[in-house]
Structure formats: structure tokens, C-alpha cells
Length: 170
Image (cartoon, rainbow, N blue to C red; front, side):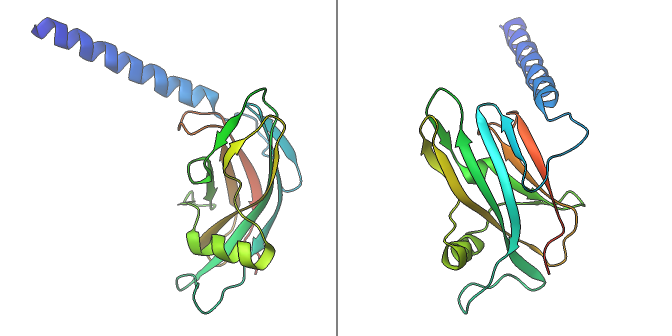
């Protein structure tokens, strides 16, 4: 019985190493990253980042001290031959030049919807469907070297693409 458990453990470890290697191998490897205004294709999706906007605030929705609300304006198109499901909180991430990651922010999303009528694309997307909107974040004012990452699926090892957005508008 003990020999069976150690064999199972070995198999699981090898499977984990295989998944890790696959994850690393499938990441974006090109030297030059796309930027604002460029359309990129990845795993049946076409993504275009149009802009990085500073968002206004109101009396009820304020960023933390020293922080701002920003929105990444984008178009997402399903170019695959199947219905796709999209969850922005799992597939979109903002990074600064120091590698800090920022997830979607609810209050920033409300402000993007109010100020610009932008919502984050989400849910089911039919073949050929095009979704326009924004992913909204809270990050430190004056952040530099901002990049936006789109993951083609929900899994961490899914192919991803990174867009260079520049500095947070003042």
C-alpha cells in the first residue's frame, strides 16, 4: 500500500512539473510588446486597447489616499468558431513598472460606467461577437510603466498578451 502511495505522489509531482513547464512555454515571448491602438490576436480572441483614461470621482466613490481610478478602454472580439465565456476579474490584470498587480476595482468600474458609459466586457460571447468597454482599476497616482495583461482563458497557464500603456495620466 505504501509503494502505491509513493507512485501516485510521483505521478502527481511529474504532472505538476509538466503543467508548470507548459505554463512558462505558452507565455508571450516576443521582444516587443503591443501598445495603445494595436489589435492583437491570441487563442481566438482579438483585443484592441484604445486608451488609458483617468476617471473622475464623486462624493460616494473615492480612491484611497494617493490613489486614482483609471480605465483601460478596449475592444474584445471572439474570432474563434465557438461560443466563449469571459470573466474580466480572472482574465484582466494591470501591472506597474515595479511588477505590482492591480485587480479590477468595483468603485472605479462604477465611475467608468457613469462618466463614459463603459462597462467591462463579460459573460458569454457568441462567435464573431464584439464587445466594447473598459476595465477599471485603482492604482497609485503617478504610476509609471503601466502594462495591461489579457489572459485568453480562466486558467493561470492560459496564453496571455501584455499591452504597454505608459504612465498614468495626470
